[in-house]
Structures are given as structure tokens and as C-alpha cells.
Length: 279
Ligand code: SAM
Image (cartoon, rainbow, N blue to C red; front, side, top):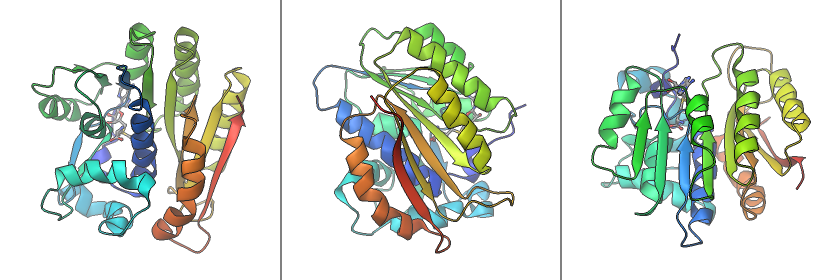
């Protein structure tokens, strides 16, 4: 059953981290003229209205994008902010781009986008956002199955964004299986996987499971807005990047000491950048 709706969470601290990393990966791929592919396995609706009932109910963006909107942010955040600004040309923060719109905004004519989303309400919205964009192919299908069927891509360069809702018990296992199968077909691709920090043990287990796959070159970037705790709720989030651009580690090491205090909810906020498996 699909109960998760990203519209309740769009623009929160986790989106700020996730989409900053996504934007930096896309910028790095654009350093070469050669076209690349972007696979987004869990796309969501594409665009979120921060004044919608869902957004107003949780108000999560208030402690996310709204805290840095209008600030003089470090250069590594500029690509991400450029894409958010493109949806809000009058300067007032109203709309927030999900990962597919970020990709749409930050890629070139000759790039190819493969977007999958299962939700019966969000998929038509996503399709509407990409109407007339001939670079994008959209599928209302399981993201991992489509990924497996599409690899390796003809371009031989690009990124796979994996951003599951983690609402079902087996999602961490499905994730590791999906990654293993994808990397077997396309070892040189970049894979960017988002995860929430709700129960620390699940993340530790995920890190170990990824290390056991034999895949190398796995970077982990994490930002916690509070200390780990046993209560229900997300205290932080992270991105695990397989085959990251060589610049990403340093960019995030420099950015997180600035960004974490901006988005912190208590003085116990923290961040880390480290290699789960080095190259
Ligand atoms: N990546 C989006 C962004 O950054 O804007 C947000 C994605 S949201 C966290 C997760 C999405 O995955 C939900 O919209 C959900 O409907 C969708 N979903 C859940 N299971 C899926 C599956 N097996 N294949 C494709 N999409 C799935």
C-alpha cells in the first residue's frame, strides 16, 4: 500500500541536504560535453506547493528551505538554489522542486531522464510537469524493476537517484538488492541513495549490508538536526553516494559546518562525511 506522500515533507531539512547533493552531482556531470542519463527511481510528484494543506499541516519546510531562503549561501549551494529560485521567480518562496524538477532545471538539451513513480495521484502530476519535454520517459512502475531493465544506459555515464519512502519493513533489503543488481549491470554509474535517521540501528545495518556487497567507492554524507533518540520521528538524514564525483567529499566537508547550524533543531545537531568503503 502506498501511503507516503512527499507533499507533507517537501522542502524540509532532509530535502535541503538531498537536493544539494543531487545538484552537485549533476553539475559535476556537466563538466563534460558528453550526454548523460538521470534515473530517478522514486520520483514523487515533481512540484510541491508550500501553501498546500499538506505542507501547512506539518510546516516542515519552515525548518528547512525557509531557514536559508534569502541568505548569502556558500557557492556549493548555488546550483540547488538556482533550481528552487527558477520556480519562484518573484523571490517569494511558494513552490518547491522535487528531484525530477531539479534534474529538469539543471540538465541540458541532450540529457536523458528516466522517471518512475508508483503513486496514482503523484504520477499524473509528474506527467503533467514533463508534458512536452522530449528528454524524459516516465513510467508508473516499480523503480527498481525499471532500473534493472534499463541498465547499462547507452550513454555509459550518469546518475541513479534512489529515494524510497521506507514505510515498509523490507525496504532496506529491497534497496540493497536493487543496488547490487544495478551495479552488476552498470558498475561505473553514480548512485545517490537517500536515507532517514529514525532508528540508528537500521542505518548501521544498511551500512554493513552495503559494505558486504563488495561494491567499492561508497561515500556517506549525513546531517542530523538533533541527537539520535528512541522517540518516533526523523532526527536527521543522509546520502550514500557510490562512485561520487571526486569533488563531492570536499564540497560537503566544507558546506556541512555552515549548513548544519542553520537547520539545527537543538544544540546536539551534528554532521559527518566518511567512506563506508574507499575506492
Ligand atoms: N525523490 C522525490 C524528491 O526528492 O522530490 C521524493 C520521493 S518520495 C521520498 C518517495 C516516492 O516513492 C513516493 O512518491 C512513493 O509514491 C514512491 N514509491 C514508493 N514505492 C515505489 C516503487 N517501488 N517504485 C517507484 N516509486 C515508488
